[in-house]
Image 1 (cartoon, rainbow, N blue to C red):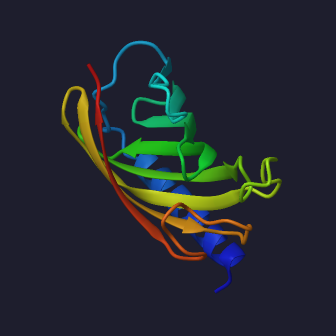
Image 2: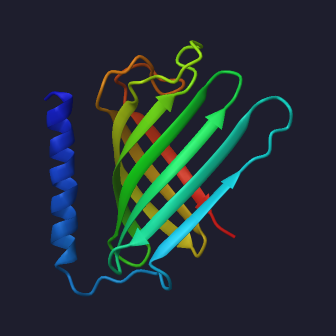
Length: 171
C-alpha cells in the first residue's frame, strides 16, 4: 500500500467507527458548558533564544464528538518548527475516547537557509485517550508521515512512524 492508500484507509476506518458509534443513543461525555473553547500559552524567552508557544480552538460538535485545531511554535538551538494539527475526538464512554487527525509541520530554518521550508511535513495520527480525573488525561498516539519533504520530525528519520504518549493537566 502506498502512502495515499494508507491515508484513505485510515480516514475511512475512523469515519466508519465514528458513524457506527454515533448510532448509539446512550453515549455521554463529561463535557458541559460552552461549545467553543479557546486557549493558549507560551514560555518566556530567558535570553538563550529558545521559546515555545501554543494555541488551541476546540468545538464540541455533539455530546460525544469534539473537533480541534492547534498551533505549536518552538525554537531552540537545534531547530525552529511550526505545527498545525487538526483532530477529531470521539468519546466511547464518559472517560475513554479515540483520536484521529492530520498535521502539517514547517521547518522555519529550512536547514539553516534562513527561509521557511515551502514543503511542509504532512502526517496523520490516531490513537486513544483516557480522562483519569477532571483536568488530567493520558493519550497514546501513532503518527505516520504521508509525504516526503526535505526534513523529518526531530530525532526521527524519513518515513518512520512516531509513537507518542502525552498527558494533559489543566488547572
